[in-house]
Length: 261
Image (cartoon, rainbow, N blue to C red):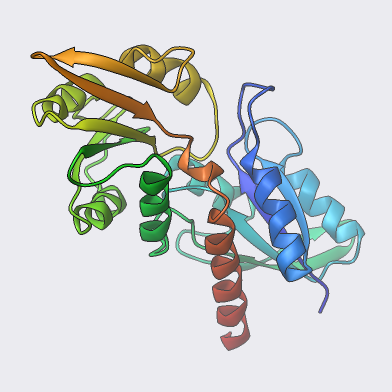
């Protein structure tokens, strides 16, 4: 059965921003041999255009990979709808121009257990340690949401390593970035800020740095009660190269599940 992978990202409104979907698509192809295409909810190519292109090439199985942190986001729901899948359904059929293909939807990457390793690697790359560094995980935030299961799990991964960890939201939910940062400053440790976003965009390159006083730079020193505290700003978590391994796991899981149907 001719199989292809469709990596579906939200898309950025900033054309000069790095595109991790392209990065991970290339790595998935190199490591698996699958034909890997990308599609975006915002900006082209669209999911519809990408699916039509695959059907024109006689692909029989499309593994659709939502390149998202949360499985319970509006973007995840939109991807499901555009693939013609009902709620909670992960298998279906897409048709175009008299041709059809099976489609299987994978899980997202933010709730995968390998996030533990990636977060630790980010801390290590900034020479952070539990003794001298606190960690602030910043998420986008959702309207009318009380479900913070995966956010807390990511924080717990680092707490298990001894880090003091706080969660903050850029919008919609509390605590906000300012309050969470002020609370961490009380410990007197340096602060490593990890933006829990898939890709660079206005949130991570403009809004969050402005709130933190990091516009145009990745770190700064602050005088807090006569003590110098350094704040460091990591790249978006979706930019980490090892996210590729999680996406590969999701693809393998989905294909194995499809064989059971």
